[in-house]
Amino acid sequence: MPNCNDIPTGLQERTEAKEGFSGDPYKDTLGVLTFGFGTTFPITKEEARAVLCIRLRDSVKDMLKMFPDLWSFGNARAMAIIDMRYNLGLAGFKQFKRMVACIYELDWEHAADEAMRSDWYKQVKTRAVEDVHMLRTGEMYVK
Image (cartoon, rainbow, N blue to C red; front, side, top):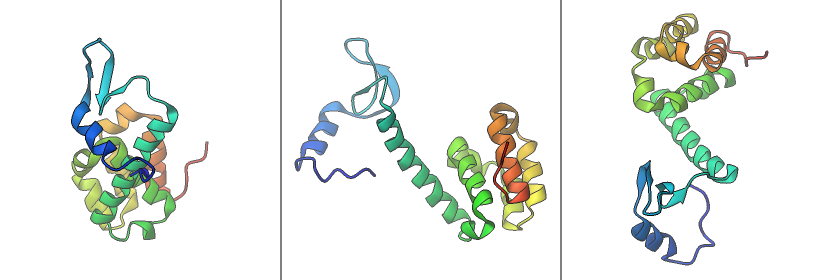
């Protein structure tokens, strides 16, 4: 979570209560597209990076729970696994049951094959090609 120590005590809680939270975009009373705690579109790159940081940390935590030896797989494989989790969400990642089983067995060839057989691979294209390469070889993808 971003550091909020410089915000006066109670301000964040009060604003959250007054704004309310919506994880889905909606139009406010003026018709402005809004989400979160009254955040309007567009958001700044800095705001988007703060959200990215939080979600990546969640992705890493989730994958460390599933694969306590995640970092022993090598940086490229760990990054591919985390990237897939980030892209698919935890529930979506867990649907790759055969791929996950192959990862537990350290069977990288078949783990990569299972990822390639998915709709995700067809939909995500270049990103998926890179992640599959990283799973299969243990090396970062280089164009």
